[in-house]
Image (cartoon, rainbow, N blue to C red; front, side, top):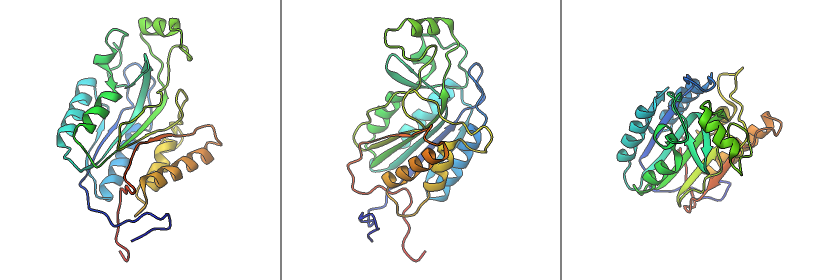
Length: 257
């Protein structure tokens, strides 16, 4: 079957796996009020469109978050369609992106690699399992203000530190077969949706991700358009695509159903 976009939607079915994590009750960083809602709703949506969903996993400490990623990595088989969703804090340190676990009190320059989650590492781990495609959705809701004095001082001294005390996530160059979507452009702040049930980015993901027979690139275009409209151009999602497959659909549905 061909869609209006021209993609041929007849494809070999792929096993669909997802890991969903939401962290809001931070020990040191600002509390995020909607991340647990975001993770619960995303898990429900992914289950409804046929994903085997691990989660939602909520308010994980570093050890538990690392374990969840390792278990998920080992569950991936060659040819799987995989999706990782995270709602919470993220930061950049020395040109590397990290996701921040719940137990963030003792994160220092000397131990950030051991106390936060390096995004590039788990991307490499997923890629080594040879999935059909990898979808990474990161709703990192705010620029993370590093509370540790040593880390703050180091950031302030850094020649290329553009944002005092903290930096937002920078763009990631994904490996072949990936789509990596951030809630907002590098170094900027995303709307946590404090007065709503969901953050702005996740709100539009939930609206569009279950659209039948729609390529993921078209889904993300619709999400981006919706976020930009609702935020009056103050928030613009950042999407990097290295997928070579002509058609990657999260929810295929035969006509007539």
